[in-house]
Length: 265
Image 1 (tube, one colour):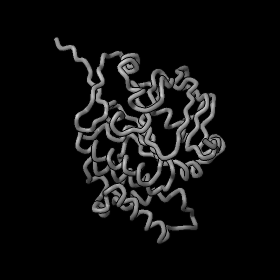
Image 2: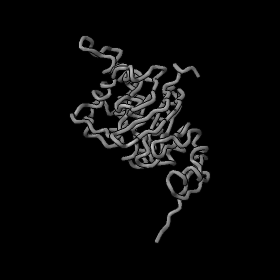
Image 3: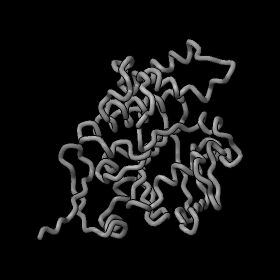
Image 4: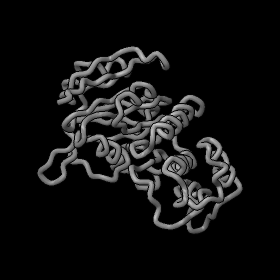
């Protein structure tokens, strides 16, 4: 694929925090219109990889290209017009309405001399619908449930109208109903709107069920990238997580399902 058409190209990326080497020669090519699940143990570098793409952490070597543009040479506003983010924490300090929070996604396109236009409000309306939070438009963001607030923050990311959305553990604090609901929304966004999504997940079965590609990380390196059933094998999982698992057919989804061995005393 043409380098400029690819949402993200990571080339031999290294990140250090003091003496700690967080990312070690990471290279990765992200293709458009696909959902990538980034998985791996705590401390394996998943969040740092996302932050490196956003240029919110400094690299000590290597490069990140957004649609062929070296992000080192890009300002924050230029990056925000190419990639939007859903962070781990969705806490918002002030009690804005959901509509006001979603409108924040238009900030990269506004300036001191340009306020919100009718087009901006139309994009907000579309984003609320896509994230299924239109009915929450006038509600205060800090009065919502965790699942509702997460959808509102996803709507804000959609409103940024980028081709790439990064999500850092978007369902880790939600119950199983809201996990499935949010990921159904994300899956539909990829399929129907053609955006590319990279999301960090801890639940390997959710990664197996929802992703087009899995990026398995361990100790700052990428162990394997590919289709979920090719990456999330008993051998790869055992090697990275140090546990014994079996992969079986899920009779409901007809996708592979991971079962772990539990040692009870």
